[in-house]
Amino acid sequence: MGAGSLNHVLRSWRRKQATAAPRPGRLSILLFAVTAFVYLLSGRTFFGYDGEMMYRVSESIVLRHSIQVVDPIYHLSEPYAAYAIGLSLLMVPLVAMGAGLFHDPRLLVTLLEPTVAALTVVVLNLLLVELGCSWRRSVVIAVAYAFGTLAWYYSGVLFTEPVIGLCLLVAVLGMLRHRRGGSVGSLVIAGTAAGLAVLMRWDSVLTAGRSGAGPLPPPSSSSISSLIGARTLTRF
Image (cartoon, rainbow, N blue to C red; front, side, top):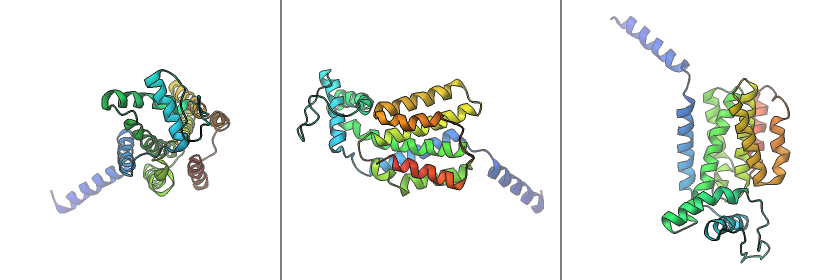
């Protein structure tokens, strides 16, 4: 085989590699692994007052089979916490495993917010692709969101808004896929995610309901920027 033939083969192989469709599963796993690893190394989760009260509800459910708690700080959330029960229920498996395996109910709770934040990056990437972005551009935007916005900071704070943001992105993605010929499963996932968002905070119904209010406009650079900005604001 001559040098010209070899160069032709190499060019053909490079073109095929450049145009080959990416594997969404592997890319999603890689995005999740990288972001979750960085988030976990960024420090322990800060509970704050809100997070502490919601954690105490989870701890009470696991250890005392009750939702009554003691508020040693302001005495405003006793005997019942003044927060929706959604995040407390989400923490129950982690509290139970921490108490049973490590005799520390708080230990595994610190994994929740970094995991939620990393999953949000993955879902944002999938949604951008569904909206018409190329895989390369969607990954760049998702990584920029992961490490260039407040998402990184709030991956270490225990409260409901990160979970609500993830649920809303999943709901929009599920509805979009269903409208484009997806299975009923996409609709079920969208409804479940919207319901979970409302369980986190009842006023999430105002935004969760919007996910099924009508067809999404054609994607543009401005609409994508607005999506990322809105997603960041849900963390306040």
